[in-house]
Length: 247
Image 1 (spheres, rainbow, N blue to C red):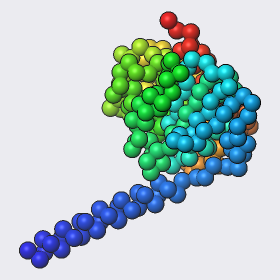
Image 2 (image 1 turned 60 degrees about the vertical axis):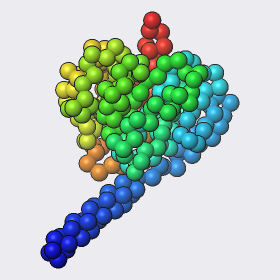
Image 3 (image 1 turned 180 degrees about the vertical axis):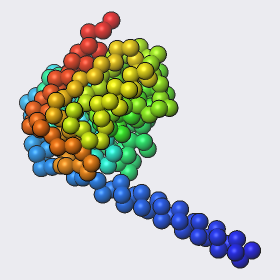
Image 4 (image 1 turned 90 degrees about the vertical axis):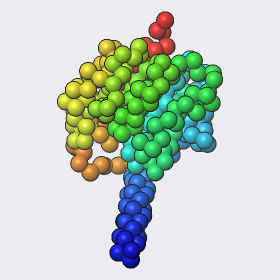
């Protein structure tokens, strides 16, 4: 019995060590760069809320909003430069934080956000990297609740199939992305709606979808980051406008 108790204690210690290791790893992700600070201030065009979620509210909102799930270990504030630009075009943008900074533990966040913004008639759900995969998972588990899907350097998990969903879907992929290749994004087409389109950004990389510094394993961008942000905004806005005018 002593051997069994010792084995049980050892297993318990290993589990605790594993959990602590996950927490430390998740919390040691990249910090937002200082460039985001200017986009986190209220302006005449955009009001910024930080509680309970980071939200960019246009002074003159349109009927469509975007919920953007962050990439793994990335802070919501890292997406402020792009989110603010989109809000200036009239679209409400909400970037929720995630448990342990991993969207896999908070894929259901969209439900509470939708309930909190009754003035938004239609929602596009999107995400960067892991956040994009979890956005697809949410749509898979909540058919009919979302009007559009926006993937930034992301593709669905093999277990998720929303090809039967009646919604607009766009993926934006950098050709210099060293973490999620254009080929991987393309190969996911069979599990996504018939409206799915891929927008390549020539020379764009994975970290260029936010402002959190270089990312290990990523390719070197050959496009200016501000230019990449502008191209992401244009492709994202096109999707939201398609959702806006749909019957």
